[in-house]
Image (cartoon, one colour):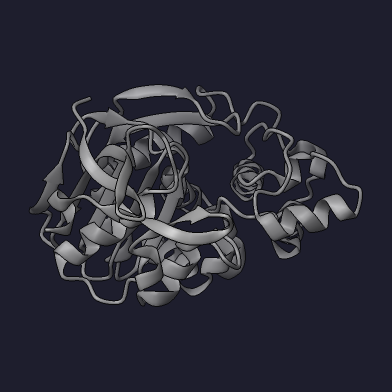
Amino acid sequence: MAHELVAEVWRGDFLESVHHGSVVALAADGRRVLAVGRPDDTTYPRSSNKPVQALAMLRHGLDLDGELLALACASHSGEDFHVEGVTAILERHGLPLSALQCTPDLPIGEDALKAHLARGLGKAPRYMNCSGKHAAMLATCVVNGWSTHDYLDPAHPLQGAIRDTLEELAGERIGAEGVDGCGAPLLGISLTGLARAFGSLANARDGHELRVARAMSAHPEWVGGTDRDVTKLMRAIPGAVAKDGAEGVYAIGLPSGEAVACKIADGSSRARAVVLVAALRRLGVAGAPDELATFPVLGHGRAVGAIRPSPVLAG
């Protein structure tokens, strides 16, 4: 992929490092307002696919709304309410915690991790940031009478439904297939397709798409965590549907139908919100928090510089 310079790392007045990547911003009618790098090349959206995965599950009978539907779209921090929500989804469908096949892990939220370790707890599937999605996948299998022991098999009906829904919303065919960090099938599309999907969700006026959009925008702390940037972003922009993904991916859709998707080439998460906010401002979108427009560079525990969008984005 021929990525371009999208972010600069300044330590004081010295340019210390740079981040390359690709980004696309779409107008409400799908027209490109901004295209940097190679946004039409296939990439793995990683957890940014989760809202579309949840949509597929709703279309196949999953009956979740509000906080628990937001949790199905989440890469949660592992706070107590997240873990309790995962248990609630499973119990509602007669499933034990042992049914979860996501990778055993620790909470990813800093405060949640400290509290977890203070209790003497270790790794388990329910603490893994994707456990909400996995609980919802299992619940969908129960509703349809599908087997649960092999729900992560790419040939499983659940995974076929997810594939069809992603291709529909992205407006393109799947370009690559792999295994995600949580063990679920991973489907690759372009950043343009990802932005198209998010714009469609956020702009929905009815149906299951609207259910996903309302759940995420109304309960952003269930999608991320109390202090996560994705939570702050959705709190600041009414009706926005945003989702971060591993390896430097980020996507957001707006009620107008406008959307942005980006990928940081080196996989770093520290520049992705900076790039996303810069692209939103190029769209003329108001409301993105100023605190996400840059990312602090620390020296001895205090900010001595910042990660800023490159000139091609700052425009």
